[in-house]
Length: 268
Image (tube, rainbow, N blue to C red):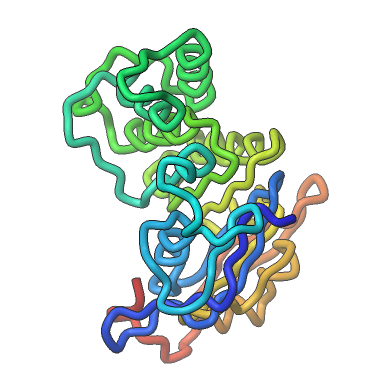
């Protein structure tokens, strides 16, 4: 049984079609990259899967049941969502912010127990933010804050992690750290869906790629089957240079093509 499935998903804002008949299926143990040009519908798809945005048509199933059969609390015990633009509305200490990820597993007014505290320490260590534990979140850099919010998401021990561009604001060292962590989380049995614009990281770390273009699925499969010259030309309007190291394909976006693609506006 697939962990999460979407069938014929469609979303529109007014006359603007964002998703149009999207199908996907993901299972535990997979790291799946959602890729595509700006406005392809990646963030919208992630929000539908997180049960934060209703689809106009289609159905999302989790563990074989319609997603609407789950209460928000029950789904929060299984799913964690890391938005593209994460914010903290209070000047909390980092450790306290990460601890909020344990709330779905606690009864009202229940205090954190030993296992909760151990998990918090673990995810702070995994994300390289343990040294920030006593800092106030308002004093963090953008990259530090993103890693702290990832720690918060992981604190809930999700079986499904939905992460929207978690490496966009990170330096190369921490980009690799986060991608290695997401791969490890998947190997531990979780299903991870991550929105990426860095095609080199997508090719190197993801088990599968789902390429969205104009709100539809253009390709779904192994990185080498999805990141083909023809797909890159049609979806991105680019030519890439390809290579291989240690048996893994890599690519470098090299030049733009004059495809007539509209550079203004687009889908969410």
